[in-house]
Image 1 (cartoon, helix red, strand yellow):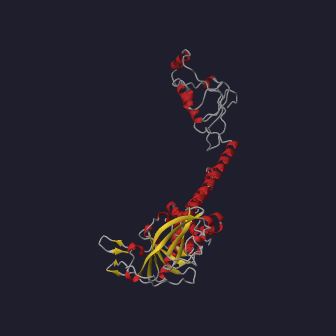
Image 2 (image 1 turned 90 degrees about the vertical axis):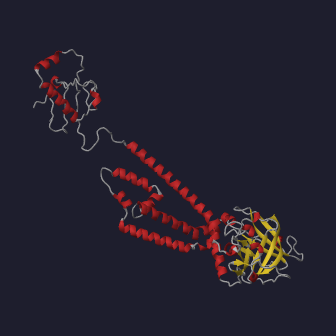
Image 3 (image 1 turned 45 degrees about the vertical axis):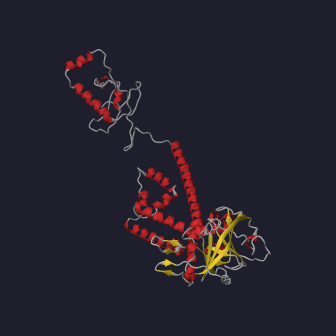
Length: 488
């Protein structure tokens, strides 16, 4: 075939063939009167004469087929068409350079520039930094929230366990009870018996009941008012002050927040409220007379005659001390004073102030019921069961499903390699997403394993991290608990 300028080369049998078409040849007029605007079919656009562009050979084949049909029509039709006035636009294709398009590529979408790729990576890095920073801040907020829960609630659970263990170690006389109904102990005449103060710090003296604080409120009373005893055993007797029932001042300290907060609601006490102390064999009933708020340095409140050190006592008194304000750095002490009313024998029943009538006419002693928190297992047991559950889920899932989360990320191909790398970088930028993907098993199982890991971390925080924080961080050490009026 000749290679002059008006020669075209193509193979209409091969739809993928692309070649050069010369619009200068009058025989190559591929006008299609049925369509006024050739640009609407999307195959090519009108441009200035002599311009070159890439078109699809399928569109070119369609136009060539139309040319063949007109060539095969009758001469009369051809002459009539040639003699028609130029009221129909005759389309002339510009010179077309059919550039070779790589197989599998999309000629309609130009490739991204190198600059846009760098911008995308920069935005991805910024988004990852912001996302991880947000996760860290949220994690810190939740961590501090659980610290507050540990301080205000869990320390009380631990204290209730220690107090119940103390009670279980002693064999005390039980109040008189007939057919499920407690008897009211009759007040005794004469001076009350006074038990000797124990020599051992932390030794159990008795229990304290204040009906104003609830039908089940009661706490152990131990010897010594150091923070160790206050944190573990509830209410503590100031060493050197009088014992229950003795002439003088029976002084007691207790926390107002955390560690069971035995005196948390001391501000609700009113004049005339009963304060009841029970020892192994006797009841000592006191009555609230007044209160005041003092500075920590005013230790004269626990003198034998409160606020009158050096005077000889003539009355049997009780003094309760705790910190104020609550939940923050305690700058003052809340003091409640009371006087002795009567004593009774435990074997005779319970004081009238502790009697709770039931619907069937029986008298109940609700304060004798242990707190529900004593039924909560210790942290060591909870941690052991969480670890066992996680190991079971982990091993079972690894055998049954292996690691589908990682397997998806590990699949690579030439077509989707860049997209996979982008997805992986987005996923790794999330701490919890990473922990979720490295767990074996299907999605639901991986969620369970992730929740178990978080629970294990929280339990470890309750067991070791939070106590260390409260002991070593100065601000937390000051605000965590009660400080006695004598500085111990």
